[in-house]
Length: 292
Ligand SMILES: [Zn+2]
Image 1 (cartoon, rainbow, N blue to C red):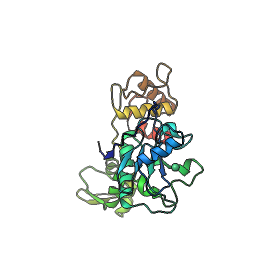
Image 2 (spheres, rainbow, N blue to C red):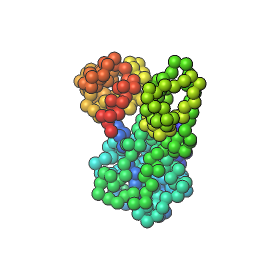
Image 3 (tube, helix red, strand yellow):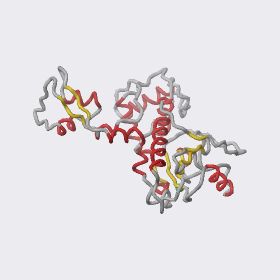
Image 4 (spheres, helix red, strand yellow):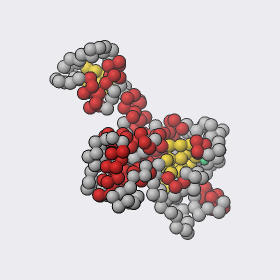
């Protein structure tokens, strides 16, 4: 599990905040103010009559990531979208300012951390203005840079990898094992029909095709599995309206019991997948296509 450095701010609030049951979006904002920290924003928001700072994190210009409200509660930062999102505020006014490299880097780290924590990827990140009539987070906000996260940045900055063909391998077999389209390998290496390759041949492997790899390695989930991935699957099945064997919404308890298996199997049947009650690559891809 990757770790990032989050500065605890211990902001005081004297009300119970509601837990968030699902996390389907990350919403990015700017502070619309050149110099401010989480404590200052906390005061502004209390003055507006809110219980506590509306955002979950504040990313400072110096790169410090400060805690806002607890990560697992519902935020107050984007009307109509608070119940299923994490809200992040970047110090500065990016209608007029340019973001510093330090702040961009911390934003990328925070994205990767949230992608891993909630099993999301960059398609789940929105600017405030993508959801509401506002200019936030400003026209200079480096959205595409930040949502790359850390992994993608590393991937795109490396050169093409190479691969040595072993006995019995075909382009499609190599493509499958590396999660790269075999057609991309063929075109990068100038291999034409009938696409013959030889044992010992050095192939260049494209990096670009790797950008679609999910940010978390996908474990196969089945009856008895436990963990954050099961919790994400339960959230997703709930979101898509699949019920447990008891006819109810699934409890997001990260425990793959009979109800979760039942809901998963219902999804597999509905979409003509092999109804094996196992959450593997095919089921994952189907769910992903339904959720984006
Ligand atoms: Zn905003």
